[in-house]
Image (cartoon, rainbow, N blue to C red; front, top):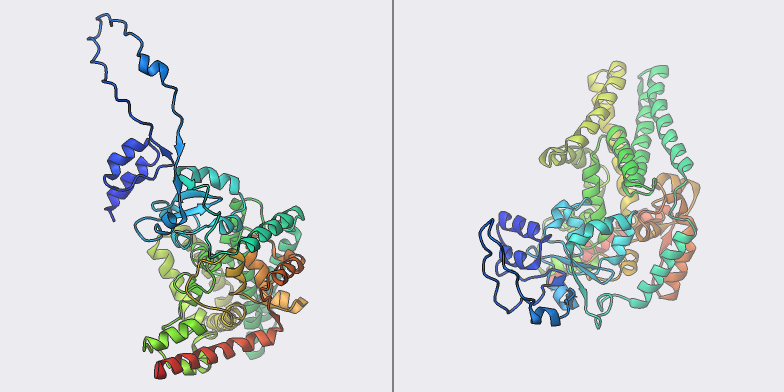
Length: 501
């Protein structure tokens, strides 16, 4: 891999003609979309006369007159060539049969460098469509990355992907868009925001009206934890660009909800969450399963693999027990609460930090006069403790019990369905989980407004039934219990492999 200066030079040359790019990159392989024209073999004309001296007329070149102008020739690639560009030095991906070199672009990718890199060497057509709300505008910026296209004899995607399933899902998406299910009801989200603000006000009024004794204090903490959980689900909507038709307004409201109402950075959420959606439950690509292997052994395949390697960072055969200690209670107050500040300072995300500070200033000014400093700190960490339990149980019930493995480069539908499951619809379940009980539909259509999940669910079920894909939906408490059952099972699989394989 060249130096940073060399890579920068390569990026600058990418917009110039191929010959200059070859000079800048040296021996590095030429990958520009258009092949250079064949250089002329005739001798160059001698230098012209000095300024002021008459230039003699030159006779027309018969060779040039007879040779027709040559148009640019597109470069063609095979899937094997694309697959080889998946490492750190070179990264290519394919969208709609077009081949793009994203080697230098990853660091400038608005969604983060890792999420786009997870598809290096692969077809990324479906995730590209799923994540972007203005695809035409994005493709204009991608033109500078275009280096060629797949050879005509090459299939549109890799043999590891189900062609019939992929084609029918794309038809389903077109139907969903025609039905208007990708358009948000702004009144729904306005009322949702208002209900959060009312809960926030009710929490403060509880202490102001009834005093700071134990019961009003506890009720205030419960109300504030509901505010934090529900604001978490609402920022999720704005972060996925599912409320407004333009990214600008989604980003602005995302900063307000996650920054001012929750005290967390939008950039951190984007960095983590889009990776999860791109490759759910794929080890080393989905950050939501980064607790494997240092805290938990997750999934049947990875747990057996860990046991065979004789690795033991924790007593995994007891993980279904210590999950109650280091999982739901601890994630937010003991980890996220502190890591988010490290993240924004280390990455110099000053806008995010400013939004976060407004939350802490507002919370401090609202509750310290009523409670005093010590009780205020106690309230804050009780709220984070309650919110953490709420957040972990809801977010893990859809994924931990499902298939967890290395990335096998499967098609979009299979990747999402094997890693997600649903929880039955009800008014409480919808509110309690922020409609993430429809996790399957959310993962297939991440920019779809949540109030439309139940409308598209029957169509997704029909597609799954036709192709023999399991569509799992279960009661809320069963989903919670399955987290513990799966941890117990994978812990036992690790122990058997550790002792006997």
